[in-house]
Amino acid sequence: AYKTISKAKNSSDKRNNLNQIIDNYFALGEWNKYKESSQKLLSLSKSSGDSLLIAKSHRDLGNYYYNEIVLDSSFYHYVKSEKIYKNINELDYGVVLLKKGIVQLEANDFLGADLSLRKAYSILKKTEEYQRIYANLSSLGSVSSELKEYSRAIFYYQKALEAIKIGNLQTSENHEASSLNNLGLVYSDLKDYKKAIASYRKALSNDKLKFQ
Image (tube, rainbow, N blue to C red):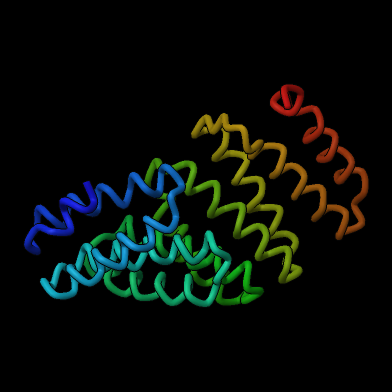
């Protein structure tokens, strides 16, 4: 399918079909094809002035480089995507801010991450994108902990637990146990060992852990 589309003339249909193929490569974890196709779509979108797909291509390339742990390249593409989405699609703007914030967190740019993640949350909290809301809140908790703003960290981790329940995020990733463990670490840093132990025990008693 990719080869057939590649031979076709640059048109809206060609770009949209290529975008669908890229999403399938992402779902399948075929990262090299994902990168190659995203670069092709970026080139086609630039030559036709297709702002939406220019933004999407940069976002996809940001995803690719994040997966490859090339954080500077991932950050570069997310920033490119963010600048376009800011003016044309609020939800996608929020999602890219979240992705950029996670890159900044992993690169130890905690103040930059805090700014990006707060902006993302101001958008995502108005949606029902609970998986992303959870990721946003959990990342804000991590940033706050790194900045030693422990009361904020506790607030965000507790909000993350609420998002898990509201969104019914029953996944194999054990979000609830992870959030409880993170709370335990914060309480340990605060030397509130009773609350730390209580959080760790709740994490260990999580039903989903018993099946792994």
